[in-house]
Length: 216
Image (cartoon, rainbow, N blue to C red; front, side, top):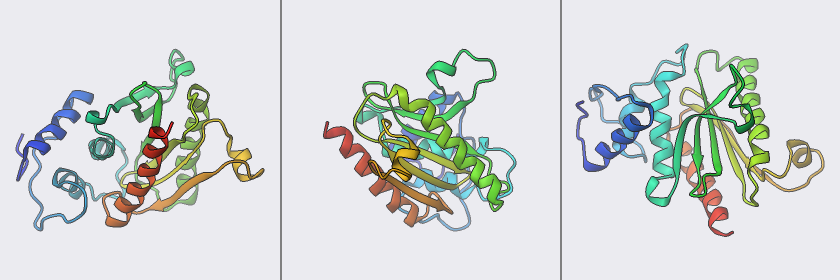
């Protein structure tokens, strides 16, 4: 594998991707102009090769999102990232859906759910709403297994576009939105996960999430 400007950290990131899904990133040629952003070079490089907003498959975007999760939730802090994670009570059902990536805390409880879908038809309101609804449904299925007081985070991605929310797994969307019980943090759809605004939004979003975990 040849990645322009590889460093020790870059090699580590690529090794994580290979270990988790058995895939390699392949040969990535440097773009005509160096990608600019707040993420490490390897993430910006991978993102620079993902510019097809009409891509019919989510698979090409998996490496990017996995690298991003590893950036915010490194194994050195005790986090583990699972690929195609089965919702506990659905795991034995034939054809049961799996969540693309899940960040597990050191105690193996889910902390972040990430469902990656293809970016095609993102500008269709119904398609975008369906991606959001799937993530909310996954949150509701996983929440009963999260017996903790801090928030559980869920992210819906369509290619590099994304939205997210976090709230206590002990509260339903109805209680939050209709009864005014508890609190929910939400980030509306953003156009590019590696843009500086997206980086800054996630930095604050995940900082509050990790702080709530440490505070218990």
